[in-house]
Length: 217
Ligand code: GAR
Image (tube, rainbow, N blue to C red; front, side):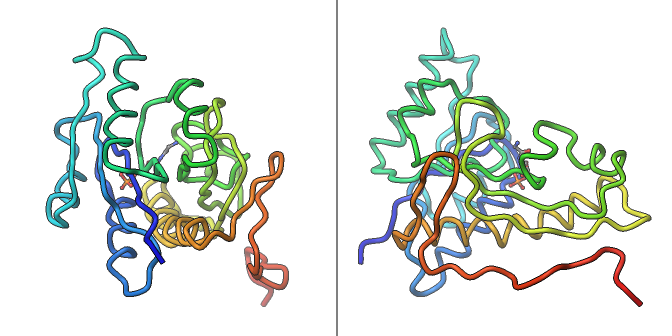
C-alpha cells in the first residue's frame, strides 16, 4: 500500500519531527515525511530533516506582506510536495481559519497537556500550580480555535511532588513522542473517522481500568 505523505511544520527543536522521522524509518510504517517547513530560520529541528534527506524549507512571516500571503506559501509548498497530512510539531504560530479549512481533517497537532485542559502556553507551570496529579499529551485534529479539535490519541504521565516545569515537560515530551507516531499510523491505516467533535478509531483497544496517583500502598 502507498505510504501516506506527511508535511511537518516546526518552529524550534523538532523532537516530535524526529520521532515521526524515526517511526517512518521502521519497516511497515505506513507514512513518510516528504516536506518539512520551519517559520524560524534558526530552528534546530531543521537539522533532523536535512540528516534524513527530507526537503526542508524556511518560510518567515516577516518576508511576506500579509498573513494570507505567508500561509499561501506554506500551502503551496505542502501541495507541491504532494502532502496528504500536515503535522504541526511545535509550530508556534496560529494558523488562520481559512488555512485550517483548506486542510480540514488532514491537519493535526500535538499539545503538551490533556486537552481540553490547559490549552495555550506555559502548560506545565499551570499544571503544577493547579496541583494536578496527572498531565499528559494530546494529538488532535486542528480547528480554527487554538488547541481545540477532535482528539485522536492521548497519554497520561504522573505529576511528581518535586516536579518543576522542566522535569514535567520532559516526561510529557516522552509521551508526545509515542502518541504522535501512533496517531499518524492510525490515520495512515485508514482507521480514523471524525464524527462531529469525536474521533472513532476502528479496531482500537483502550486501557482497561483506573490508574491512581499516588499509588495505593
Ligand atoms: C512540544 O512539547 C509541543 O507539544 C509543543 O511545543 C513542543 C515542541 O517540541 N507545542 C505546543 O505547545 C503547541 N500548542 P519539539 O520542537 O521538540 O517537537
